[in-house]
Amino acid sequence: MVSWMFDGNVADASNNLSHLDFQGDIRISKVVTQPTGPKSAAFGVNIGEVNLLGVHLSQGDLKASSLAVINVEIEDADLLVRIGKIYVTELKNKNWLIHKKPHHIQMGDPEYNDLNMGSLVIGELNVDVKPQTTKDQDRKLFASVDRIEAANWTDKNIGQFGISGLKAKIGSFDKPIDVSLESFSMRDINLPYFSSFGEAIANELPNMAPKSNGLSTHLDQAELHLLSSTPKAVAPSASTAAPSQRLKDLLPGGPLDVGISGMSLSNLAVDVTGFKFTIDKINSKQGRNSAGIITSSQLDPMTMKLTFPEAMFLNEPNGPTALFMPLIADGIELVLNYNATYEPTTDVMSVSQAGYEFKGWARINLALALDGLSHYFQEQTVQTAAQTMLAALRSSQAPQSDTKPNNTDVLPMLKSALAPFQSIRLLNGRLELIDQGGIDKVAGLFAAMIPTAEGTTSRTIEKNTRVIKQVRQSWAIPLHERADQKDRPEVERIFMHALARWLEVGGVMTAVLQPPEPVTLPSLVEPYDLTKRLGMTFTNQLPAKN
Image 1 (tube, rainbow, N blue to C red):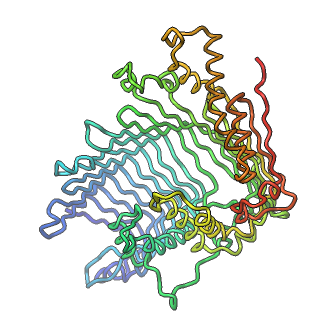
Image 2: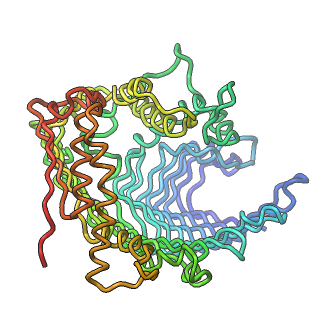
Image 3: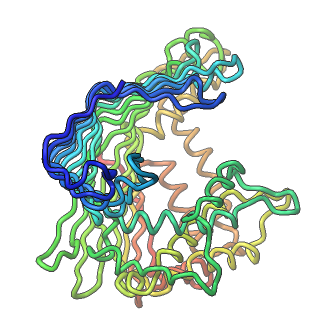
């Protein structure tokens, strides 16, 4: 049963809505749909209410001050979707209704590139997937979302998009994957850029199909067929293809523009049979100058943590897994952060800090300065950016050879991958590797497995400290030996010496790059005279005494 109520002025009630001007309100209640045909018998859609207020419908184009859809239920043989409410303000869309035959209204194919909304809220979303066959039970899914919302949605930009209150259970109930998310949001989403980049990726995907020699990538063939058969995903012929847009035309914020101005996340948790992965928060933001160019980009410290099920250690108290319990019983934490700036007048990007810290183990600090990004940004197209990304993906998926890789084979591949970045130059850099006790922890584990003269592994603290030192020295010896081989590249030799020293004494290993002249990125793969060209030096700083 469908009840219609029109409150407004209709130019000609005998014509269908796609051919008339209508202004007013539209209220629809108790909508029930049931498609015909044997394969659609289990499919149905029920809608409690649809309220369109402040409607202006002209030639199939729709404008409305607000749209409210209440109590939506979509059901198929193995799917049930329930939506408590959908609420939209300031809705505008073209081709909303189309003319099929007199007195008959049919929904058109909305043109999403002409979709505008002041705000969108989807509340109380529940999705329940229950496969009918036993073999598909791992496809079970139950997910609920408290709220999905978007604001200031235009054909060029979505001001903000967010999800809150997500809970999901995936797979069979004896071994489920539990996912929860407090909130996630992105700001200033550049729709033309992501649309263009998505099309460029789709155009390149057919090139990743399995080759006739039997070698294949991990790309699923069903997915490839779907993408390549989609009209927008089919690569046009050379004679008809429109030129790919340049990055500068799609990303007005300059070289640091990635298509969104910021992202935030709060309390993500994924539990797989007791292995729990969490992210406490993500908060990234950007700063712009008066011309709209992004001059700063920052990621506040975010912590990713992996904890292990207690049963993994208790089930085999004398097994090899139990040996690692002292090291990982409290989990492993990785803390990330970065801070970058860009100066448009000099075209220099500086990363003042990019930190990667395994909490309680070690930390890596990276700082560097590059120039030439503006030229790359102005000259490169979305298509070439997509090709570069997929080329790297193809290289990572290449079959491993049984023979030892030859540098003469690897270098051309690396040069080709870096060729688009010819204009980008390294000005300086600094890398710090900081021991936070991790080396002693691992060495202590090995020391505990070395028996004493009495045949036990029990030692005094003083003796144990001495054994740990011996273990660390045993790790350093082969690195020193490798560094002493004169036929090895100089950069490898000085790095091996510094790394060996770090394993022995800990502290801070620092690599400083101060090139006498800027070095282009593709030339970094050339080992010849690299130490001199980079102005590379390594130092080791002893740990501070307690």
